[in-house]
Image 1 (tube, rainbow, N blue to C red):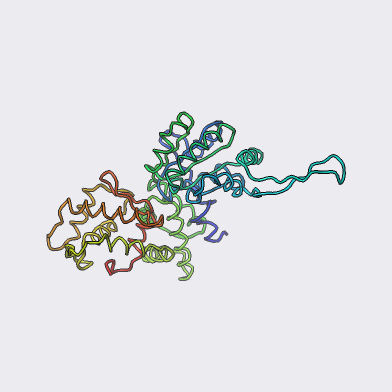
Image 2 (image 1 turned 90 degrees about the vertical axis):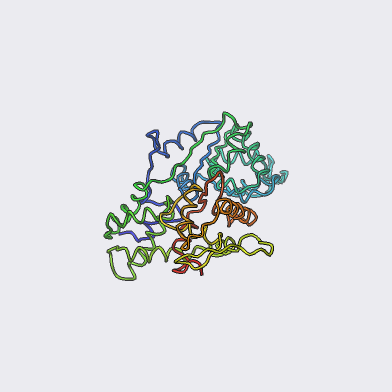
Length: 387
């Protein structure tokens, strides 16, 4: 029998718990990616929320031996772009060659990585370039890469760009250099039924007993993230082994939720949001809550985000209703105040480094960019969330 960490694999390509998803068209995402990669001269764009399985899909279809993955955050220098890609593929930065027809009669030549040598290497070794987290690159770098990729795909390089939705439109979807040369795959959020297949397959293979109600709870708390589901299920197995049981009950599951947050380092993000923007000497309004004591609007927004049920995105009206629900004395904040605090919160996150890109307030909606952050808000702060 396999070990739990061979069945539930949060950070890499799973085997027995891999789920093949069907698109609205009736074809699978695997079939769609295979089709996109087979069309010469096209760039493939995969857009979808964080931790939805974009990279795993590529690894499944392309194969681990044929994929060269590089992050947009690594692309800082335009002049070094192809050098970085080549070295990531295993090419030497520099070397020498010896040319000559007779022994002891040769000319030693030094070579360096060039764009053309990188393209040749990828074609010869049947490699595919995966540019993951494309949105992490600066706008100028994104535009430069788009220009370079136009020529590269024309010369046979197969490229897949993975990014968050509504973060890549300007530089890829509407880029005039790439018009008519893009295969777009918009990955939809996982449904509850799709997520439920992971524990059904995995616990079944491990001969562990789990009810439909428990599987439903797991799917809800995974917040449309297969990676989070894999993590939770693995930790359930670890705790179950420690207790010497194969039966999974709600108490064990809730303990596993808390256990799963131990490696999630979002305390600094919470503190920065709670601290908020400088009030310039003006005292912030404070609101009384039943469960968390007195909170200002930054604290209320955080606790409203953490309420049941978890969400991937929420409208302002629904978020405001959650905030009002938390207040015990009927002293409701104005709509304008809440909007201003949300804008300030976004400004704070935008001014911080990329590890703070967990939420996005945009177009009258609040988006969860990082499902692990929401999971941490719900399960990683103990009983006293405001403490």
